[in-house]
Length: 218
Image (cartoon, rainbow, N blue to C red):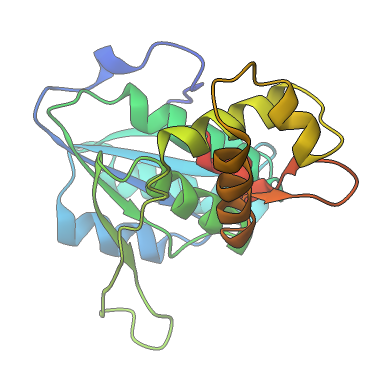
């Protein structure tokens, strides 16, 4: 069963309410087959390359032939090395699942950049993802459950990230002056220091979001 989904399109009607959903990166088939066998998902969403090479294409075919008759399999294509882009697509996919469903993430397969993007998406949607798994290469039968971290931003931090991403500011003072009193200068300076410590913004050459800051805003 080959079905390609675009996160920009409607996906909710493909699932059944209250089901298990497994979102996984993939290159070789073994990690996905193992994770699917253990979890028994009703829906499997594979994060693949925009232009799958021969090995990835063969893996996808094997997964479909092995699981396609019992599991609803979908594919989401992303760039290979754009971590922010991967995270954004994965967040969109997570958001499209029915809220009653249980979402599991497995980052074992695929390129590291894809796995990191999916992991960051799980952090950005901490409240929607039930578990994050990794299967060590040394012991393919083992499961490492990764922490379900969250950015946990304050309202002030969220406001500043939005302003910095959507407008240009030469300095912290410039930012504080253009907020029209919605945040006091002291609050702005304190929040900027916190965001810098979290590596969500950089103050080199003006105020800019880092890749982590862009993902935190998803």
